Image 1 (tube, helix red, strand yellow):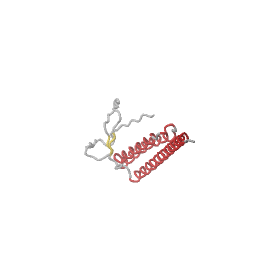
Image 2 (image 1 turned 90 degrees about the horizontal axis):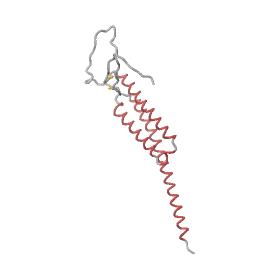
Image 3 (image 1 turned 90 degrees about the vertical axis):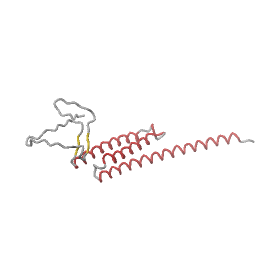
Image 4 (image 1 turned 60 degrees about the vertical axis):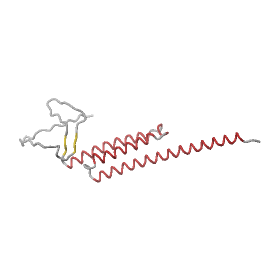
Length: 164
């Protein structure tokens, strides 16, 4: 993966430096995951984005990346036939969907456009419905097998009890 680094450079034409009190400004906060030290560079602990269009783009990009990871997880769950006996993977998928839905609502909804947020909700609803239907059919299948086993057991018991 390409290592991306960004440097903030003062413009050559403008010799003034503007200071902002970012604690008092409303904006999208970004923080680096690791404390990276680069020689001859300014170390940044936190970046606050105050441009509304840039906030929307960053929030949409982050949500799209998380949704893509969720789709990859769902693909693995749907392709894996070994773990379908208990439906545990499907329930874990439902948990991941609810986590992404909550994170989108709490962290990103105020930065996203309403249309993008509604589209994300619709996509998550579709995934949730698919998982719920698979869990339902799986439960029905095992319930049916359990009933058949009980009928067979009853038939075996009644055959052995018959007298002359």
